[in-house]
Amino acid sequence: MRAMAITEYGGPEVLRPMDLDDPLVAPDAVLVRVRAAGVNPVDRVIREGYLAGMFPSHFPLVPGWDLAGVVERVGPSVTEFAPGDEVVAYARKDHIQGGTYAELVSAPIRSLARKPERASWAEAAGLPLAGLTAWQSLRAAGVREGDTVLVHAAAGGVGSLAVQLARVLGAEVVGTASERNHDFVRSLGATPVAYGEGLAERVRAAAPGGVTVALDFAGRDALEASALLVSTPSRIVSVVDAQQVLGLGGRYVFVRPDPADLAELSRLVDAGQLRVEVEQVLPLEGAAEAHRVSEAGHVRGKLVLEVA
Image (tube, rainbow, N blue to C red; front, side):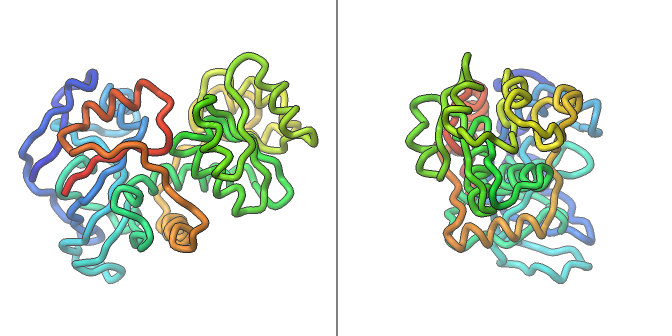
C-alpha cells in the first residue's frame, strides 16, 4: 500500500512516500480503505519522537490517528460493521506505527463509528480526534446549561468544535482567537476576544457575569488567565499542559477512543448541530507541507490529507 512514513524522528522533511505491506487485521478489527486522513498537532509530536517514551513505537512509522473511509474487510468476531460501510475512526492503538496517512488502515472496533452522511470525506476525517477531545473536555469540566465557558483557541480544530458542543449543552461561550478569526468564532456562537496581554480583562468585559469553565486548547498563558477567571479550579481543563493544570487543581484530558462518543458526534453533524471547518485539503504526498502549515499556527479548523 501507499503511505507517508518516517524511518527516523525529525522535522517535516522526514515524512516520505513509501510502499508498505498491507496491515494485518485482528479478529476484533476492520480493514479500512482510507479516503481522507485528518492532520493533528499530536502528529508532529509523534514525528519528533516525543511520545516514544510513552507508547512502544516502531519504524517505519506511519503517523496519523484520524480517518474517514470505507470498510474493506472485517475480522471474524466483528458484527458491528460490514464491507462497504462508510466509517470514521480515531484509530489510536497501543503501539505507534500503523497510522492513518496510508491507503489502508487496520482499525480496532473501539475506534470506529459510522461516517456522518452530511459530511464530506474531508470534513468526516477532521471529526474524530478533535471532536472527541472537545466532547471529553466538556464532560471533564461538567459543562451544563447556564455555564459560561471560556474556550482558548476557539478557531482551531478542537476549539471550534468545543464552542459548538458547549452551545449544544446550553452554555454561553467566550472564545479566544486572532482578530482575523473573530467573525468565524461569532458564526460558531461564541463571543470572540483577542489573545495577548490583558486577556483576563477582555474576558471579564465580554462576560460580565463571569466565566464558570475554562478549556485550554492553546497553551502559553491560557492557564494563567483561566486561573484568574474561574473560581472553581476543578472546572479548568487543559489538553496541553498536564503539570500546570493539575498544579492549579484542574483536569488534564488525553483523548480516549470511545465509539459511543464518536457516534454521538456523527449524529450531531447529521442533525445540523455540529460542523467541521476544513481550512485546507492536501494530497497524501503533501503530508510534510501539512505539518509545516500546522506548526506555523493559526489554522482555522482542520487540515486534511486526501488519500483516495
